[in-house]
Image (cartoon, rainbow, N blue to C red):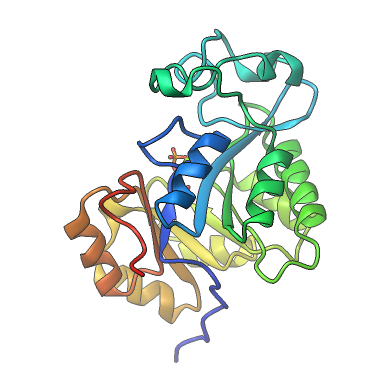
Amino acid sequence: MTSPLPAWPYSPYIAHRGGGHLAPENTLAAMHVGAAQGFTMFEFDVKLSRDNVAILMHDDNVDRTTNGRGPARDMSYTELSLLDAGSWHSPAYAGEPVPSFVSVARYTRANGIACNVEIKPCPGREAETGAEVARLCAEYWQGAAVLPLLSSFEEPSLAEAQRVAPQLPRALLVEKVPADWRERLAHHGCIALNINQKDATPELIDAVHAAGYRIAAWTVNDPARARELLGWGMDAIFTDKLADIRPTA
Ligand code: G3P
Ligand code: MG
């Protein structure tokens, strides 16, 4: 017997880190590029500054994606705001700031863009990051027709997100699909399992659907693989190759 699938008001094509490889990741400039490429849903990574302001950044350290040095968790929001998060990508983006999560929430809501908010806590800050991101999402998307999908590799973050805002949809991110994925999804009240695309098979997709969950795959940068996964029934793929893999009109 199969369970009914949860609502999935999301695009099958999700722009990874906002603009994929076309713009500096996790910036508002990236979102402008993603929107211009026809994407209606973005994934991005959110963590807390030292003084508990939610900002967009993937890595624990600021070194790769800004002109700064060191762990993001040791920097205040003001210090993070002063960094150049665009020059590393290309001169056209020189001076692009590290955005606050609130500024991205405002932009996406105003433009009807759906969000997958990946809770990506600084080490040791799993619980408070999950709680704060969920609190902000509940506030900024109050009354919205399409709620943001919260996801995380960190189960303590998901647990806190569920406690603070149980009404928001959640997805469990996994590096490797665990044998007990059904139990973990049920435990965190998730609607979806977000897997590494390398682990995707038709059998896994069917099993996840039969258990009553959605499934999405990161990061799919080969157009033939994107077609294959979507043909197998994958609910969504995350891509960096926005010019090659994108929603069709
Ligand atoms: O949320 C999908 C994907 O972004 C997970 O991996 O390392 O790119 O955040 P990562
Ligand atoms: Mg991510």
